Length: 414
Image (tube, rainbow, N blue to C red; front, side, top):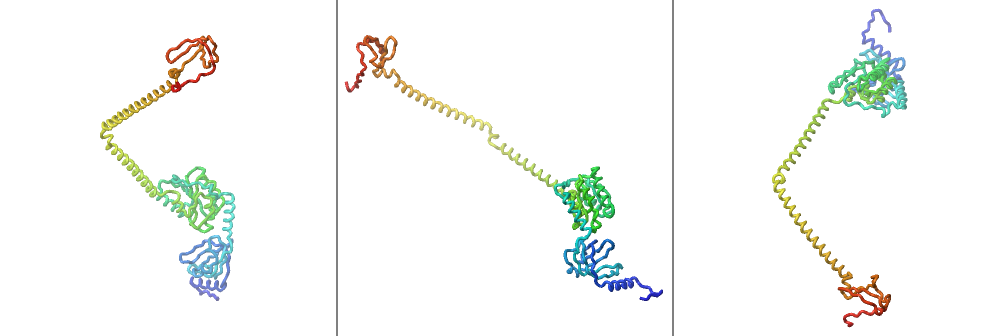
């Protein structure tokens, strides 16, 4: 193109000329790099950048071409290979790659470093549930480790002020991205612990690319969170963003706003709980008082309290009746025992020696020793005997003795 001193181009003309030159020079190219600043627009178009160690290329993939995307939706840190055309977005004057086809090309350098550190810390046990501390339900002091100028700190202040204004916020201002940010975050956590400035810590920032959030993937931050005696809530980026800090923290919140919701109770909910408990307590007390009142009324109306004299008289009459029954039972028992005694006495008397003597028998004793004689063969003539009868007795002298018993004759025999 021949230029003269009088040749002047408008911005649009020179931009279109550059566009034609680029499109002619690079009609179709394949580019490999690491995805960053990825955005899925509500229109369905995808906007991102491909970068390597030395440069960065802006890319766009229109909705109509997404059907040619191979694999999952790209994310920051993912290495991809794109097929497309170099073009110029005339409104901003920036060149870009209009992507026709997109496929994964492996894990990018940052994502690879993330996975390596995650694996190593997991093996050391930094992510184990046994190390997780409970978050206090009613914290009096809440430490916030974040940027003092970001939207995250404003959201945290606003939400906690609305939900639980009794809590005191203590801000530890730090850089949340760039060189030295990780060290500042770790030092702020250590300082909060050294002086015991808070009951719980919120450590985080708002959303951004993987590079923007990288401070929270540094090992120094992970170890500071793990060593914290104060429970830590990690609140980094958006819900889809995960950092090493999320795995080490005692609780992960998907966003800083969610962390503010989780760290304190809602005063309106608490007021409802207290009101409900108060109502239940009042209802229980009223119910018990009502039951006791009914019991008192029942007792007042009872027969015992209305006519105590009749109750006592009835009890006295019952006592007299029981006394008469006891007297009759005692008399019957004594009479029965007396009849039994008489019967036993008569039986014993019929078996006694006097009764035997009364039937005509006698007792013979030898004198002078008084030995009872039961065998006539032991006697000799002239011995003295003492005879006892049913009534009286007699002394006799043996004339003749024999050991042969004379048969006793019954009355019929005689």
